[in-house]
Amino acid sequence: MAKASTPRVINARLDRESSDALDTLLASLGWNESRIIREALVKFAAQCPSKGKRRFIGLGKFDSGVRDRAHNKAHLNGFGR
Image (cartoon, rainbow, N blue to C red; front, side, top):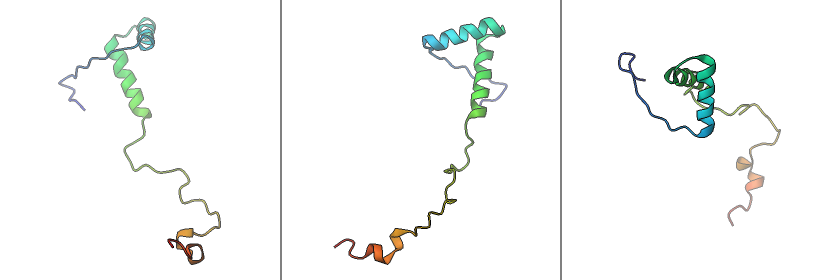
């Protein structure tokens, strides 16, 4: 992240929908473009998942009662012949 004392300048190309949304926010909030974009980035970053280890929900918490077939000798009998 850039230091507060050295502002970072970015350029963005907006499609028609994004441009219209920006115009609507400019009119309704009375903020400048920079503030709207800064606020939007902070909100978006807050909604993004953390950099922690990703996990599947429920992984390892389901027991079907069927044993692992990769280690079942009867299942592997004749495999690869």
